[in-house]
Image (cartoon, rainbow, N blue to C red; front, side, top):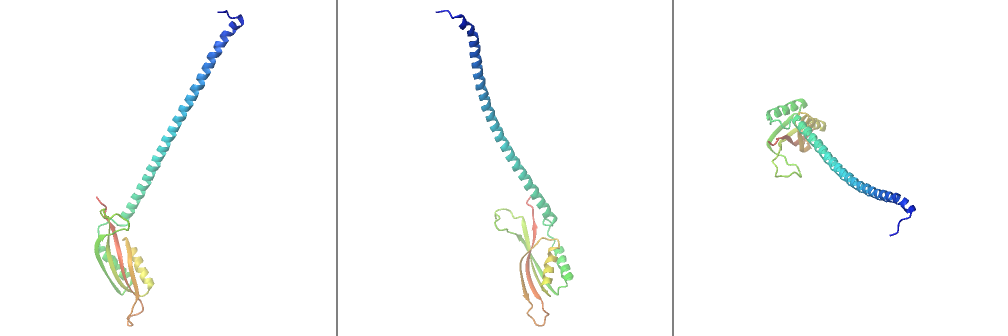
Amino acid sequence: MTPLSPAWQRLRMPLVISAVMLLGGIGLVWGSHHLLVTTEQTARMAANRLGETESRLRQAQETDRLTRDALAGYAALRKAGLQQPVDRVAWQESLQATHKALQIEAFSYEIGAEHPLTIPGEATDNTPTIFASKLHLRAELPHEDAFLALINALKHAGKPLRPTRCVLSRLASPAQAQGLASTCEIDWIRMRATP
């Protein structure tokens, strides 16, 4: 083995330090790259969790909105009297008051039995909650405006009504003054909440 020249001996320590620093730099770059990849993965996972949380929040807000709308609709139905027990006497009194207020000469009505009201497209296996009683109304009116006044008076009586069919015809008898004969079928709607 040949001894190193003094110039190489002087450079040996800086070369060793440079090699150690180079290895340390390579390790630092590799560690930084590994830390960057790990941080990016963590950021992606956090972004995914944030997206899922925001989605669940939107669903909860939508459920809350739908619940509030349903409760407001239910309160409106209660306020409209749809859940009140059937009071046929009050309804007959209301019909008589309408008859007198509009001064209709020939006026007759018949209230049918209560039956479940089916809504097109609704599943039939559910217990019905909406019921209707059919009102058959016959009246002789002087003109069309009196018919509209009669329907509006019935609508404003505080009961949810749905006219299903009305037939208007001119009075045929020459002994009678000109006017209209009307025959209407009107549903009186009420709701029964399921227990």
